[in-house]
Image 1 (cartoon, rainbow, N blue to C red):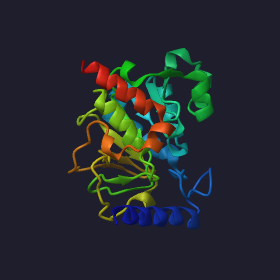
Image 2 (cartoon, rainbow, N blue to C red):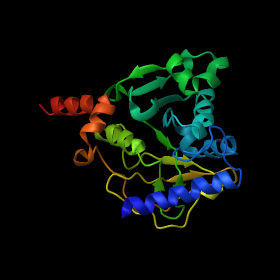
Image 3 (spheres, rainbow, N blue to C red):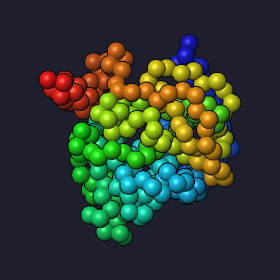
Length: 245
C-alpha cells in the first residue's frame, strides 16, 4: 500500500510537469528525477544559503536538474562528490583546483564527471558538509520527499552515514519546481531521507522537519539483485566488518 501511494504521487507530478510544459530535457520525465524549467534559478536560490556558502565538500546527485548545482559548486571552489548513475561505479570526486575553470560546465555533466573526476572510495572521503538530492515530489511542511522509486539517494546516504561521513546535523537540500511541492502525507519507510531545505525557482523553504535522518544501510532491505547491480554495497559491507575487528 505504501509503495502504491508513493507511486500515485509520482505519476501525478510527472503528468503535471509534462502537461504544463514545465519539463526540460530529457523528456518525457516519467520514471526520472524530472528536469524542469527554472532549474538554474532553483540552484542559485539554494546557493544563497549559509549552509551552501560554508560547505567545502558537497555531495550532489547526478541527475539533470541538479547539473547547475554541480557547476555552481565547482565555480565557487567547492569539491563535489557525485554518485555515478545507479551507483554502479561508486562515487566520483570533482576537485575544482584540478579542473580548468573553462571545463567546469563539462565536469558538471555525467560524461564530464567521468573525464575530470576521479573514483573515490566513500571511506576515503572527508566529512561531507552538505547533501543535495533530486526529488520527484516533496512536502514542504514535513520534508518528506519522493525520488524515482529506486532508492539510490537513500542507499548513498546509508553508505555515507554508516561510515560517519554524514549525520543528523548534515544539511540535506533538494531543488524542484514549485509544482513538485505537495501537500500529500507522503508515507515514510525507515530508510527514507527527509530534507531540511527546498529551493524552487521562486523561493527558498526551510523545513520544520519531524523525521530523523536514517543512519547506516538497512541491510534487511538490500536484495541480492541490489548487491549485483551495486558492487560498492558489498565492498562497504566488507569494509565495515573488517573495521570492527
